[in-house]
Image 1 (tube, rainbow, N blue to C red):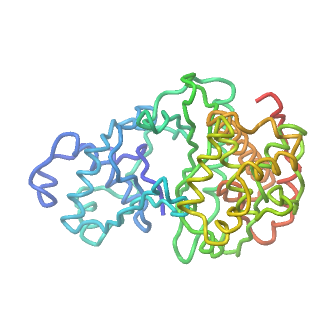
Image 2: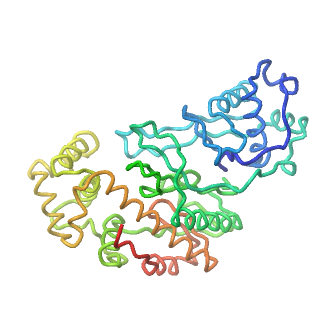
Length: 391
């Protein structure tokens, strides 16, 4: 399994005549797109290649040196699928109202007919080349503005983080990562930020996705690293831990659950904390929590809240965590700033472990590691700190 890599090329220009057996009509943009697609399919020929199938703006030249148009790429993939040259599986988008659905990218893989086509065109795994080194950091406009990728301002943070992600990706490529026979080949871990204040700085968000992020938590138990079974190490109540890290330079500690507030079910505390962090007022938080209660809460959670006010739950959380209380009710931008700290803390831990020769896969606040490395990973998780006091 690999992500479609727009830095790969077969180093040749394909013509309509060469592709007439695939489809009689090609645009010039589709000819550029199919050259990159076939280069990916041959380079990763034993694996599925993941790509985003929904319509979106073209990727910036920084991430797309050949200028492959997204619409042209989807058109070329469709022609390959209709001609039975590839096996195509459409992805799943997460609907905003359904927080439990795992979003899935679309997948394509060469069939025997497609392999013969590539060989006829002299496209082989050996002939495929990288045009330049990949970039790993992306800045996007907010969803309400279309969510398109835009150029970001280079600064010390972006340069240091790009270097970190390059080294982390290079390290992971030295290891064999599998799940139930599926191989994650040449992982390309990217991080996505949001331009919430129009500064074009990488200040908000910064999580990664794709690859093993697409596998459900139960399925991730079957991941192996270098043929060795893995363990999962994840922070309890990570958001609360991050807030304490910002305020005190220390997390709560292994095994301490920041969502454990006396008399209130854990899931209700967790949902409320999320709403308190991403809304600018208690009223906005109450409306957002009420929406969750109506659409996603189960029978027991609704029954619990029948006998309590939403304000009383908020009050209990604030009383339980007075040191971090001032971080609540500050709005979406502040919530995404906290998410920025989360992402940086995770990848700082991953980097420290890589320097020790220990491969870990990150899934938000979870680290997947070889069982033999589990105790070391726990130790590094709670001892690797950066000063985030002045976020």
